[in-house]
Length: 357
Image 1 (tube, helix red, strand yellow):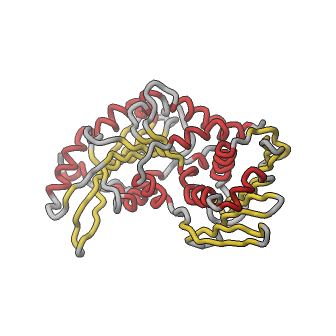
Image 2 (tube, helix red, strand yellow):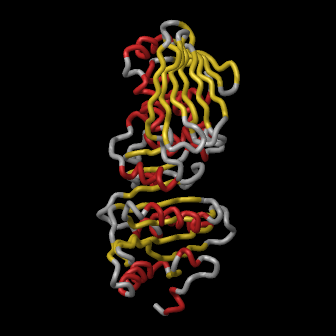
Image 3 (tube, helix red, strand yellow):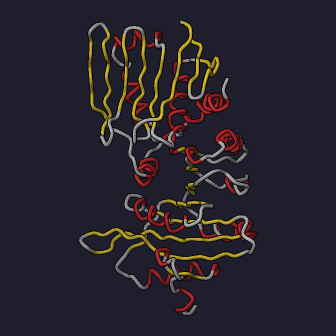
């Protein structure tokens, strides 16, 4: 392979050196031989798939942040499904952490741009370059397309997605549920919209550790959830979680973003309001005797959990907030274990909210 074969492509310098598809592994060996001061580290294969223009460059910046905490072989996939021509290109680079001002541990990155019919060879072109003894974590960005089929997702150990990016939520949710019920489904599914509500859900649950709020739990009449623009799916997932955990069944939907649920004492309302800058800014549960709330003020790095005006009793506590950046959201999920069965359990209720009663 000549030096010309691995020179950066015009306008794509951030991706590193362009290499022939057949020369990727050889190019990586040369990359490490040229930098003997750094050490390659990898605990997972971390792939990112996107069909959005410019995604390879944007995702390279995200991988740079993620590899500060999670060593991996990063594989970025950019796809243009309806391109009039068929083409496959590849680039290689590395993300290195510094220790004492010197490079220490580095993670490899292989970037692929697949256009037209070349996308049909994704398993042979892309997944042939996985480190075979490591699990495959794949982050699918945007709505599902025809590429998301059993031969594709059947080799994934952990699937990341963000349901806030779905333009047709009911359609994409149906695709996801079909994949999760397939003979070879992804082992774990992480919805970043669900992940962004984690600390809120912990805080809401902890409200009812005290006897006074617990006594009111069966008397809740209304739930208000405030969410940032674009984060409606996060709020819907919290609504689905509350209904499942409290045993409420959907009765009807009188208007957009307002639902009525049956529970033993009558009807309870859940209403969504777009407000604030954080993914979630408030979850408020109201009974005839008072309000039990978790709120996040604009720009705050913490949550306020409080009980208001119940027999003159008020309380307020500070709790951690959910991370705001994609890098921190992905990193926290990669660091967290568990089987994510609760997300699977609330999907039917989530689907019902999307479709109405």
